[in-house]
Image (cartoon, rainbow, N blue to C red; front, side, top):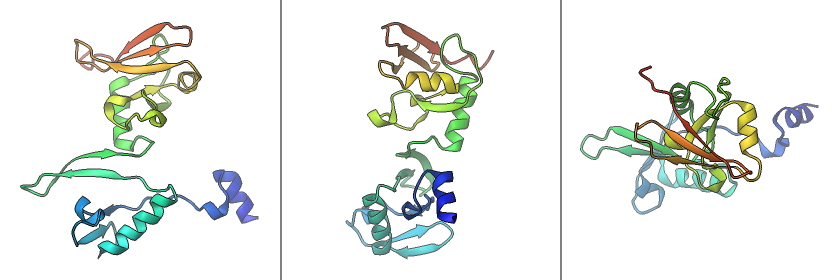
Length: 182
């Protein structure tokens, strides 16, 4: 009965398991096997690179691995930036997009933001990053997933985030993030 409950709640069979996040940090040269070294498991300490590569290899083969690249300043060793291959926007990034957009970015909608969505879809290679994200209400997000819709970020003279959305009928609608000073 527990297996059935798990399947109904998560939409996955018990044999597929439950996704977890594991923060494993290691230099790219060590990950790719070019240099010897160690990896750091958040909350678990240091581990040999071979064990870390094995964990990453198995997760990647099963399609369960997401890689976040952290950029380190060579002179200080401090983390100075990050990008992500994850499909969902991390909480901090989603919060920034909500603050920038304030309400649904579909022109004339003005509904509260329910979803943070990719402008260029993730499945089409759209990155999970600030410029490729927009806040939409649920109805507008589901509508733009239908065949014939396309969105793209365009430069705006004001410097504000601007998106052109083409509908299936061929109409183009422009949405510019609100002025934050207003």
